[in-house]
Amino acid sequence: MHYLLKPTRVAAADPPNRNPYAPYLAAAGETFDVIEVDERLGRATLDVLRARGIDPGPVIFDRRHRRIGFLVPPDATHTLPTRERRTGPRHHGHGSWITIPQPNALPGDPLIWLVAPPDDDTRTPCTLRCVRRAIQEAARAL
Image 1: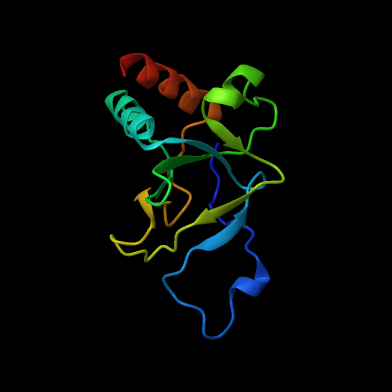
Image 2: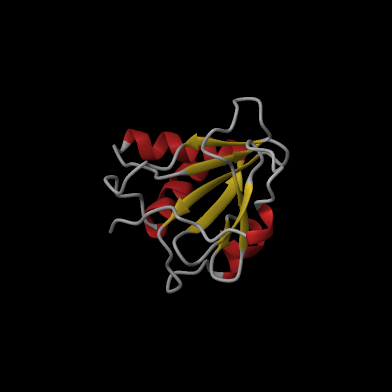
């Protein structure tokens, strides 16, 4: 399944004097969902996906909160079980707003792309189920 990362942004976020490096606020659940984990687990999950030869899709790193977010195609049918919602990954879907970095984010910015979104629709990102399996495997390894 291909999808484009064309998030719906808040219109008021584009005043003429807006900082070109500032992140955007985007609506999740329409063109993407986000699975968010702490940095250590997120980096281990990336390692698991890469070791399997799976394209993780776009990945955001928030330095302020030490969190990593995996953007996956929207999937309202596979929400996280109640047990995982309290202690594990956070699933941001329909009704959630996500802060995403600019494509030209600088390496020292608080919000950056670990894996940038594609310029076109040629890559097929990992699904929610695939990311969840990789998170579980990485958590066991840690």
